Amino acid sequence: MDLTGKLLIAMPGMGDERFEHTVVFLCSHTKDGAMGLIVNKTAPEVQLGDLLRQLDIKPVPVSRGQIPVRFGGPVETQRGFVLHTPDYEASLNSLHVSEVCSMTATLDILEDIAIGKGPDQVLMMLGYAGWGAGQLESEIGLNGWLTVAATAALVFDTEDDQKWGAALQSIGVDPLGLSSEAGHA
Image (cartoon, rainbow, N blue to C red):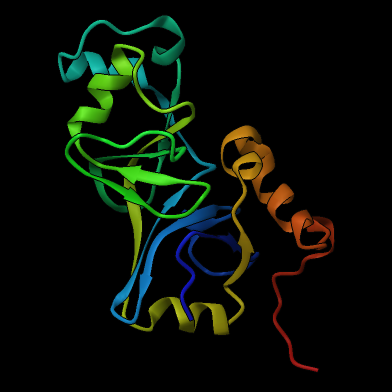
């Protein structure tokens, strides 16, 4: 099972409040583990312009400086990742994940964004979500996650507070009908 490029939707009652109502874009999923970025949890009171200024990257266009920074996950929360449309490739290294998204974790993308030469759409994250070998598969088997195809509309165009419900609805699941109790027929 390779879920690279898919979205994970956290199920109610999964037991880890850090992932409550989250939607995670999986950047990599192999037999050795998985790495993803939470796309719907905004880091409180941090904007891309703040990070660019801290890194002494100038100029910062007002429109780009106002982009909220998201909590990408609980691992390495000081490390930055940019999930973006595949129309851009960093001069150092971009990971082309799918037709919907690429991911770049090098400083050059921030420099390009600051001068207006970055990707069309971006989500800036601090931290990431990671799973060891077999861990994600086990969590999916325990009804911790649902999977859904990632679309640009879900990842980039839907408001953060609407992504969880929209992702569920994209596979025909009514968020109001979900229970935190798992069962077997």
